[in-house]
Length: 263
Ligand SMILES: Cc1cc2nc3c(=O)[nH]c(=O)nc-3n(C[C@H](O)[C@H](O)[C@H](O)COP(=O)(O)O)c2cc1C
Image (cartoon, rainbow, N blue to C red):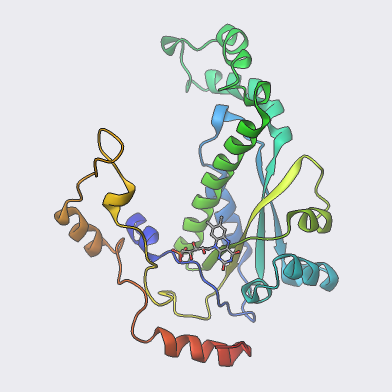
């Protein structure tokens, strides 16, 4: 799918076909997209994931995970869960991974990068070597880069024709059920499956006005939105009809009937 169309077609899908498994190749492509996202200091091993496929999972673990996802109905319906996790031990790799970027010709000597610069400056500066500074900042940054990976994973799922969405869960319980070490924290859970609702899911969900979100030059001076660019994005499928579409209530009623859920 064309990139702009992928961006525009993504929705948080909340109804899945429980009877239709997801091909392993598609799961892999989601993970591959996440792996290629940028990393702070190239530290690489901070964002990890446990993929849980319903058919491969003991019932008590699967049921425990669905309960840990607050029994949100989509959790039991979607045949695949990706438990995106922040592993703070990944920061141990900062130095060797940065040196790999120098070897790869990505960080260059003309930009002042050398092994000595890494040791004398980067490793001693908490803004770069976040574990040398405030742990809250380190955790915050780890969450940002895990979020970047998840964002790519969501778009890759849409590109593969899957329904996807994120769920929040009980982190301690998930850690326990999936045998995660203390230094790993489940961040967000991505569902994968074929949507039981129309992929449009009632239209693009509301967003604040562009001008309220983005400024130019200084805070408070709105970035002016060019209507021609908006039209270009509409034509490319990035900006789509807003929710709720007129048929959405009827669709939800039908889905509630299908899954035995309240309307
Ligand atoms: C970090 C994060 C956590 C979320 N957790 C949940 C959740 O637990 N349950 C849920 O139904 N949706 C969850 N969502 C989905 C949002 O509610 C959704 O993004 C919002 O409704 C906007 O809709 P859209 O994603 O379809 O554009 C989460 C989204 C994010 C980014």
